[in-house]
Image 1 (cartoon, rainbow, N blue to C red):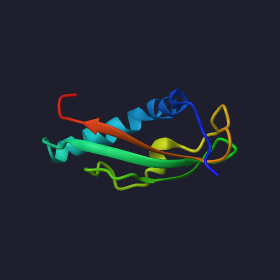
Image 2 (image 1 turned 30 degrees about the vertical axis):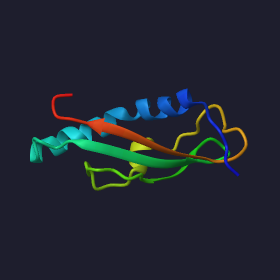
Image 3 (image 1 turned 30 degrees about the horizontal axis):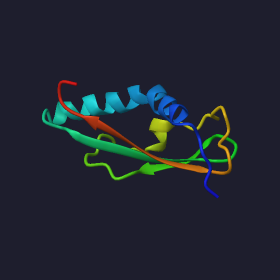
Image 4 (image 1 turned 135 degrees about the vertical axis):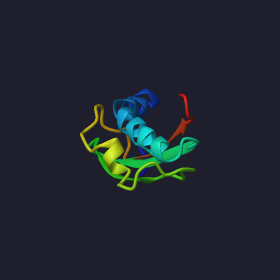
Length: 98
């Protein structure tokens, strides 16, 4: 069953963890100064409001070798999803100089 969370809650999750994405991108720029593209994280929020899984959601670039779960975290969210689990694919665009 598919649940629902307000878009602002999902955006808050990503914004709270954006520093992790940015740091990895900046590290990638040291190796490739022209590194740019889209990083997409797919994560599933379970009925309890926790991130149960996270994976690559179709990124154009790789900025880190570890699991996408390390970017999103697994702390419970507030509020819990309405009606079941929620699957999110959230893209972030990176360009040198941003």
